[in-house]
Length: 428
Image 1: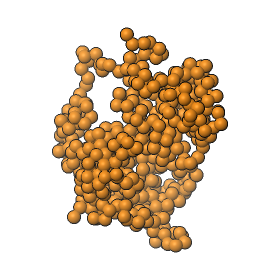
Image 2: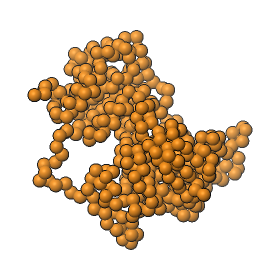
Image 3: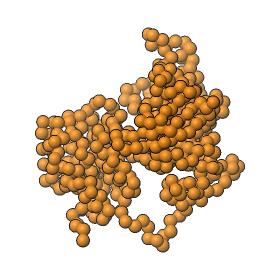
Image 4: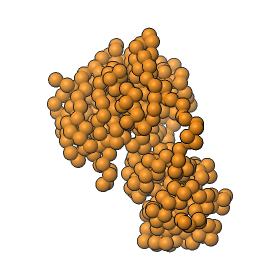
């Protein structure tokens, strides 16, 4: 009997289907990589498998028990999760962070026992972090911090480890180190590992089996040599590649074909770097359209857990995130302004403004004053989304004085399609 069964699941954010009719099985002790382009549903599939999200259709089961019928505490003892991003604002010691993984095993009083500390020490030793146990999490390098988050999951003593992009933003030394660690855990401890990856070659080298998603649907499942074919990659990623056997492992290695320079490059839309101000699901569809058109995107500032925040994570879009249910801090607003200034233009979605996120409009005004172009979707009706007592309307009026334009989604699409710098040229 398979350890994991994903039975014909479909999942949607609001009205946008991200997964459709995905059906697969994973055996105990497997090492599985989930692959696919941005927006294909990789992170969403992992969250559904963890029990964080519940599919609108189908079911996910662990040893024939539906994942959502397993009590959260018991589920946490079975499944360890390493998210794509982890926010620890308080300067916890590394040992304290790893000890958080013992929470599902604690008794009524929530006190760490001797046996719990043994698991914490073992997790630190396994990840090579024993000597750093007394450092704060903020004193660690990126690779050390990521190993610390993995150690926290290992301290749970799980049967399954789910990881979302565990080596994103790490250099190649730490990427290899993390994958080597996971391989040893799989081989030595028999831990079932399921991870999301953008790196086809790393996944090919280390994973026993691969899942390839294409726009939310299962394209292929099996060993790397069956999944990573030039035909599959062309259909899913829309690129031409050369696939070669990688000695001495015999695993497929993917090499991009150089572009045909005689064709003069991509025709049509000119890719731009665009910063989007969203929140509450207001920019999810916009982000998908802009990403599909080939633009480089950033989003923020939004709260962690917000629909648009999760959408940005699914699409692998840079995002400034504030902790849940907090007003956006000056630190996060400054990061947002930096992204706006680095972008070619700023687009403000039809987002409601309250005291918690009004700072985004102030940053947009500051970007305008620095010479950036700002487009506001349905800007003239911003009063209907103003829950600040009129401050959002006042900022919008000031933004118009500095050149901000209100546009419809169709007008924005046309401006970008024509590749115009000022957005003022009319169609012939």
